[in-house]
Amino acid sequence: MAQRGRPKTYSEDRKVKAVRISEELDRDLKAVSAERGVSVNLLINRAIADYLARLTPVDELLPVADG
Image (tube, rainbow, N blue to C red; front, side, top):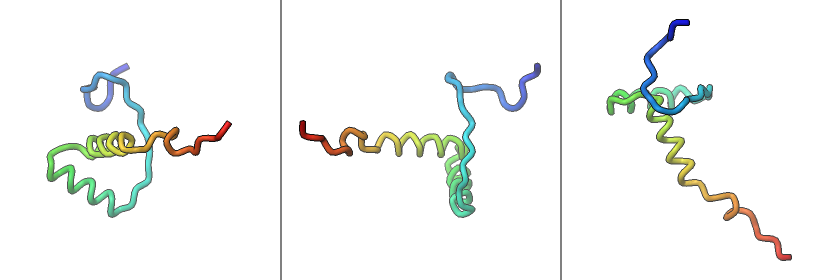
């Protein structure tokens, strides 16, 4: 079976996720990606990674039960 699309240029497997975003956010993403010469996909992946890195661990959020 012939490969479709661009050749794979990354080392790990990728998953496709569909998300809904506002038209305004879509416009902003496209503008910033064009301005910086990077893909919208790269911006989204970096934004998600940055967000996840900043999350407070769950065990720090949950109250500790006294035994």
